[in-house]
Image (cartoon, rainbow, N blue to C red; front, side, top):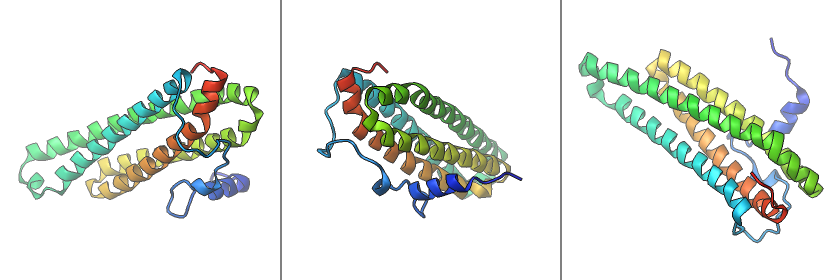
Length: 197
């Protein structure tokens, strides 16, 4: 049995809404509140990396929708070929999800261990934002683990496709919100400080 850290549970409850999405009203802010910052060269690199993650998330959602459409087609039961195709789609989706999870986890690790360290050293006022972003990285990692578990369940029992759907949609909601927050708070300081990422 795993011990649950009550302090960690309280921190997560302060960050995650009842529906599982990230609560943007509790996010610390250091930006001037003027909306999107026009990124310079250094900040644009972070935006491009995030845009790549957004595009891969869209691909993940599209792959899932294709599997879902095939699963809901009554003709799947007509022949073994269709079933084998469907099973291949499940495995392909699982493989794509696993790859995306690794890329996203690596991205967050690099931010936590390198970019955030340099930003905090250069501008201490960013500490609350960086702390929140690190917490969100942990929550997103947990969402990725839940997606992985849902995929395993779906491969074992195709009737559990709805669990994957919920996990993909929750991940998309969390990740898109997180990336937007990170850009709104960090692109300007990255540019101002000339941080190379």
